[in-house]
Image (cartoon, rainbow, N blue to C red; front, top):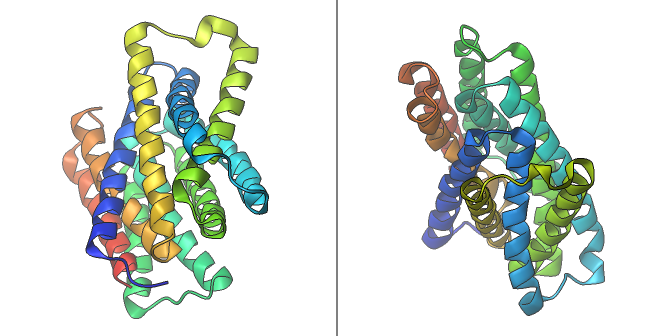
Length: 281
């Protein structure tokens, strides 16, 4: 895979901002299960509009799609617990910070991609940033178990990132792959929630609109990621996408009022710096 162009870099950075934004919406709405259901509603609406034009992915990509759908369901379940147990400004950077490390190593092991000196420096800096976030959060409401749940979220993120990277390269059409993936994933989630809770999970129109908008943003952001995976290495795509950790830390401090800026933004900035080093490598 070649080095990304300036346009690819810019689009992936925008994806990171969008991703931090929809996660803040998920954290900010009242009920966690309702939040995720609303996000999936927005994703489903987008996918329904796109699938008639793209069609579903061909059979040779089916197993990638099926595996990714399963891991995305697990990811959303772990994410709910992570946001329930911990602060957004800590849980999000830890989860998103560990993912590029795992994706980069998976690229070396599975896709014959190579880590440079810059990449190894990035690994160390991200690790230090995550440790700093974990340590600085101990005096507040985030517990050690919340850190473990956030790390589990990161493992799930890395898993579906690698699978989708192979899948979208096999299929060759990022929009078709994304529409199929999120059509299946969101439909499964909405059916499950409706069976379990009936109509009771559907909130007031204002909350419904906000949640659905968050889902739409998440779909667009991840479609950009899928497109980027056809243009450059998996590690670079994951690293650039996860620069959103800095924006998440800022949102957590100033929007959710989660502690002092220095205790969150500085460690999150360290994670973001390490991610950039990974991308440069």
